Length: 402
Image 1: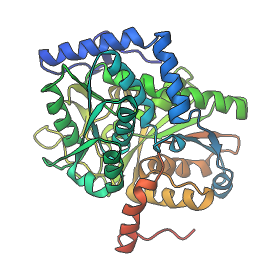
Image 2: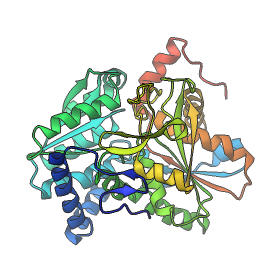
Image 3: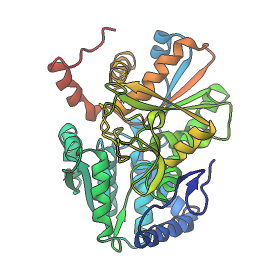
Image 4: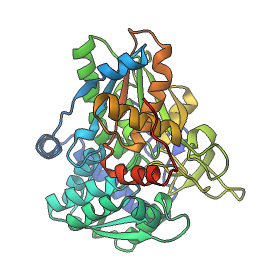
């Protein structure tokens, strides 16, 4: 497993590009994380809630029908969609809120894109009896109304971000601004493997339960490691959670799938690792999509959880050293995968996860039947059904004939 330097760099990427007062707060967080990450009482409590609240372990499911239909490689799904609240995000929110309690924080603040991190944060804050505020892009508030209401039901205050493109980047901007105004009492619960150190490391550690389970499960099912691990990449939390356990095993190909959106022109996609360049944003250095002035570019994806113009620094490092590869899938490819899995296996995937599945469907027919693919099904698609239904009703998309 990759470990960052003491100041939070994975190779050239990561760090703390923030004002000195914020560095002090971040270093306090880093010290607390190092103190508790291997503490037996902390781990015992974390594991208790993962079993009793999240419902782990979740299955590694062999898609017999989908494999038969595609021909070629065996396709397995790591069923993060079966977690309580419907996605991988709760793995991280439990860990961070347990840390916040030990640090004496009273309030939780977070950002969210598709709403899955917001829902997981609201639920975990309710469980732990903590005040919770969620910042969400105004555009995402509209397209993910169900998740907004779920957050509110669990006691969270949802604040729409009205600046810029009104999506995930702006939600992060506004959450960070609100946090620094009351950092002494407030814990910023970052949902992806991005941001200044120690967040990328901390999120990876709490999400690495995905890969640990998947490794043990595939060894039990097949007696060997997979040939491919595939996951969608926005900020990169579900991908690094799956990849982390397999990084030392060079024979396992790690593939991240970014959103190609409506095409690869400016503002039509969010394929940061495929088409971006190094740059600093939100307090860390990584690959970044830029506008002509070098500022964060406009981005787009059909999935609200993937439209972010940067990416986790560990992914940037793994791209540069060749340990992982990054490709892209379009809106249409993701929608085709969304419908195909629903109709062949009775599993409705999140649109984010559908990007990863789309790449698996692209390569599986070209591979031998002995090849094993694990796809991280990072969330379920209940949150996306209304959006997809509207698109079908308006004639914007036509469900594929299967």
